[in-house]
Image 1: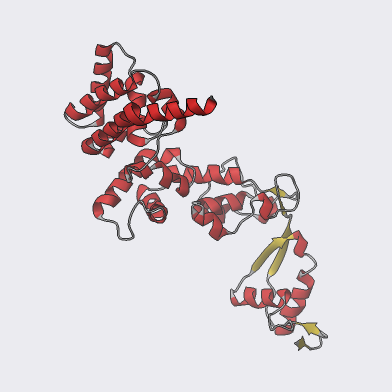
Image 2 (image 1 turned 90 degrees about the horizontal axis):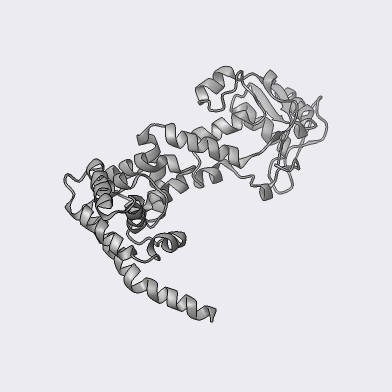
Length: 328
């Protein structure tokens, strides 16, 4: 298809397959969205004169154009998929918050007054000035985006983070498509307890998973350090006594009971705390054990400690024997 007038001569706006050409599509799209300012990468400098001719031929009011340096990969080559370049939709599916993505992209090549790196969109809109856009290429850094995302996970209102992580919980089968009120309340408490330990929503769903599923595996390093040494089953049995009898069932009372029992046994509290954490969560790192036990609940904590004792007494010796046999 050919567009002819006194400004444009034989200007192709449609390809042979019926699809519009890039420059024509840009002009129509930008005009339809009533854009007044268009900022593109410097690689589009050669396209802008053609687009201006189209604006004039169509009788559209010209927007203001600006061109900024391209965004480069960490090795300062042209950014591509192999460097982790991805779409906004993909970032969202990986667990990045909209607030964090906007914050990071705004700072990619633009520097506001001062040294603040966490900036809500309202402040970005208020302070943005194209004169402060760097004249040199910005470097794409997913680690920086992840750090910013972790900040927003910690600082956004709790109900907002719960709503954002819920689809990830559902994706992994930890919560059903129509969650009950009790599940949502547990999720709220679990997120409040653990969100400072996650950088993305995907990580957060994993961090709280053991509150919703008993089917976790024990970390191998935890097994070696806390279940394999002699006396591990006995320490778990002592932990079971504490969890079964402590009143009231609050994290303060649980902590006091653990420390008292450890002193009576002549042990450092950590000798009871670490095996219990591994038994109740399957992990060696997490929120405070006593808050964790309180939230998991007495009955479920006891079931998990029993499972761990059985593992230490029955399954673990068989695993060790098999490993030794392989070495021979």
